[in-house]
Image 1: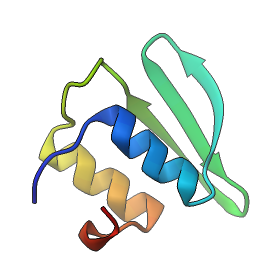
Image 2 (image 1 turned 120 degrees about the vertical axis):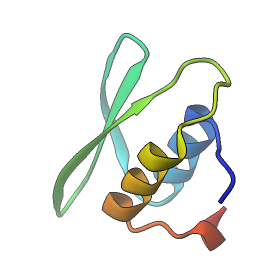
Image 3 (image 1 turned 90 degrees about the vertical axis):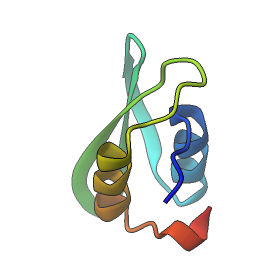
Image 4 (image 1 turned 180 degrees about the horizontal axis):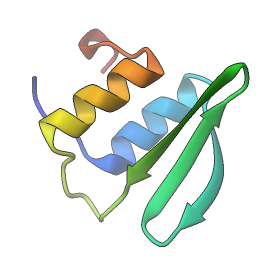
Length: 68
């Protein structure tokens, strides 16, 4: 699995129906209607997300590697 930036993952999430509910510094909080999980995505420029964090986000959001 290759790593992707927080910016790219945020765009991917928005295209899947997740909505940005607030921003706290460089961390964006997303929520989806009908899903009680909130996902806090760190957006630090174009720095890549660490693999473990990316896998966790993908599991919660229901996104697979094939989606990007």
